[in-house]
Image 1 (cartoon, rainbow, N blue to C red):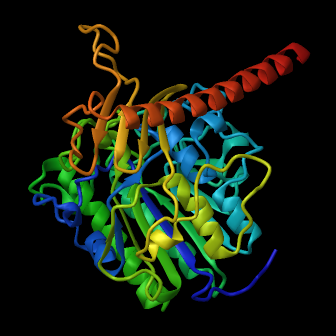
Image 2: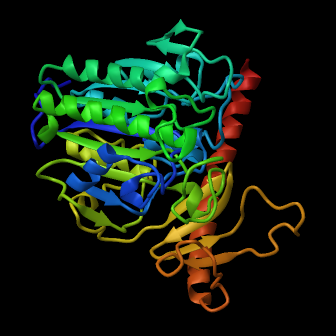
Image 3: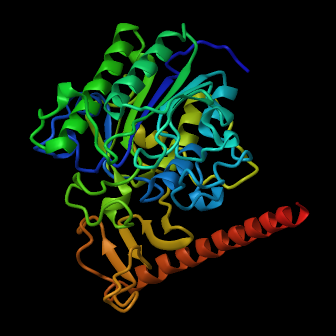
Length: 423
C-alpha cells in the first residue's frame, strides 16, 4: 500500500449522493422554484452530465452497482433491503473504497449505507476506514445512528443529520495531512420522511421538500468552502448526484415516471462534477453514462486496479468528464428485481416490461415500446412499428443479457442451496 501524497494526477475524491433527489430538482437543471447555488457552482466550474443513469430505480441495487461497478443482479442485490433481511453486500465483491484504499487512499463514508445491516455487511468491512450514518432508509425502523460498527444513538434527530454528516466529512478531510482521500457523503435526504433544521424551515418556495434540498445545497457549500480553505480544491474531484428519481415529491424535469419506474424519471439522475484543470468549466454532455461507470473511472484516475476475475459492467468515462465522447456506444440495461425492463442504446430506449403493472389492463398489452430519446425524452410516442430494425437489434441485446444474468442467478441459487444442505 502506497503513502504517496495527492497530486493533480492523483486526485482526492468527494462523491456526494442524495437519496431520491429528482433529475429536475436543481436550478442548474432548469428548476425555477428551488435554489441550489452551491451545487450550481460545481456545474459552472465543471461538467453537467445530462444523461447520467442510476443502475436501478430504487436504492439498494443502485448503491450496490455504484460501489461495485456491476449490475446489482450480478451482486445478488436486485431489490431494496430491510432491517429484517439477513442478506447484504457479499464479502467477495471488491468495492470502490477497497480499490482506492489498496491504492493508498484514506476512505470514509458518512450517511446512508443500505447494503446490509449485519456486521459482515457494514461499510467498515467493505473498504471504508471510517463510517458514521444510518444503515438503511430513514423510513425503516429502528432508526439507529452508527459510528464505526457500534450504535451511537437510537434517539436520532433526523433534522440534524445533513449538518452532522457534513461536519464529519469536513473533519475527515482536515485530518488527512496530504494523503489522498475518498469521501462518500451519502445524504439521507430528501428521502421521506422529510426532516430539516429550523434554520431552513419555511425558507423555500418548494415547501418542506424545497427546504430540505436547499439545506443540502447549503451544507454541500460548507464542504466546498473547506476544500478551498485548505487549498485542496484544485487537487479534488467533486461529484454530486442522486441514487434514483424522486418519490412522492420532487421534479423529474419533465421526464416520464418516478422512483420505482424504469422510465427516464425513475433512473435518470442529476450529475455535476468539477476538477479544475481537468474538467472544462461549464461543459455539458449528453453521452449516456451510468453510476457504475464511476468505479473504473475513478480507479483509473487514482491508479487503482480494477479486478479481472469478474464482469465489470462500468466503463472508464474519463473522456466524457473531460468534455469528450465515448469511442464506442454500449447498451445500458435496467431491471426490476430479476426482470429486464428496458434497454438504452444510443438515442434509443426499448421497454420490454415494467413495474408496477396496471392491474386494470392486460399485462404487457402495450409492450414492447420503443422511444427516440433525442426527439422524445419524455417517452411519449412509441416508434416500434416504424423502426423494426432498431427493435430487432435492441431485442437481441436484451435476450443476450437476460440469458447471462439468469444463468448467474441460477448458479447463485444452487450455491446457496448447497451451503444450506451442508449446514
